[in-house]
Image (cartoon, rainbow, N blue to C red):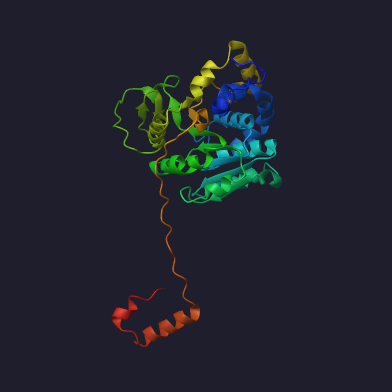
Length: 331
């Protein structure tokens, strides 16, 4: 049950986790959410990719951000920019928060950004660094330097990314207040048959990301590799992997549900979440992290000056190089 008063102080070890839950954030931030809805609808239409992040998930992430009040938000896996828009709006409202959004693809720049620019002023983008870069090689120590509260949205897929999050990023924030929200994990206890149904004509899930085949790990249903990695990690470290679906179903009484639906409507208020969250702040260490080795950066040879290229070309044309020398020339 939720009431409108602030939560009672709790111990340092679990303060971050207990103080911020989806139901508490939804309720406490309900008036701020209602104020955001007109712009949220415009931004969702501009990005036009509800399949990646539904309208109610937009609002749940926004509410969690406003409730947690981070100094910096790390958005892992921007795609077309649903989450980047959510977090940038929240950062603007918080006033002292930055957003670092990482993706190696260019869907945001080419498809969504031109449409978003028609809706918001240029100043709206000030908190946002939408970087096209490799998540595996990014400098996280620099990103978190002098930051006290870190919010991480983990939406990039694959075991290699999971190894980076668990073996590189989490060690960098373990001494800071932080929350990690994970998309693409559903709670089969509260979801439809697609999350817990028999195999049907499906084969075993074999590590494919975001395909039709799913894996069921206890009550966690997913089609992405990080589901396996996070169950392993939280089990080894005896951490609680929190279900947004469970919290949303248990966190409101009937009067509060009615009030939320009145304010937000069924499109933006839902007891479904399809995401989980966790934090190392739940307990004291020690913590156990997998070994992560960033990929080796290829060393590019210094370009050969134009005059040297011309001389080489002339010597080749005049047949002044032996055949076994020519094959070693770099262009």
